[in-house]
Length: 115
Image (cartoon, rainbow, N blue to C red; front, side, top):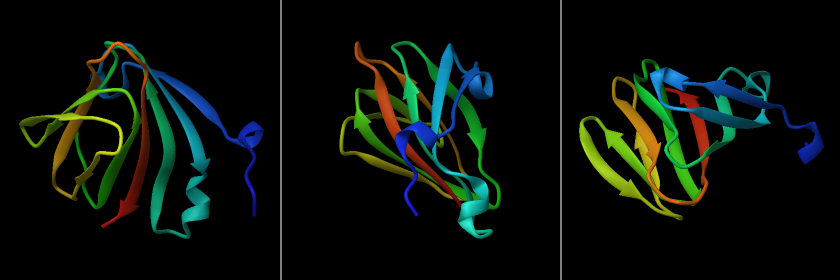
């Protein structure tokens, strides 16, 4: 199966998880394509100053892979700067948030799978 860029669903969320600004999500797969093993495989785009607010994952994990830009990740209370090529993992029962602190667009591959 091939999913062309023109077929990928793009949604924009305001103040995602009580964060700042807008978040664009480009769904690379739809939830039903996970065969019950997860719910999100997307490219997340954050413009400078935009963020996804703090949230905790229960029964699932989330992985971020940074494609472009500079992000400040709150990883269970510890702030870490992420750059292209960096990867973060938030296990079930843990929490995180991320903010674009750079001058360029922050692009992240995000994957949420069941724990």
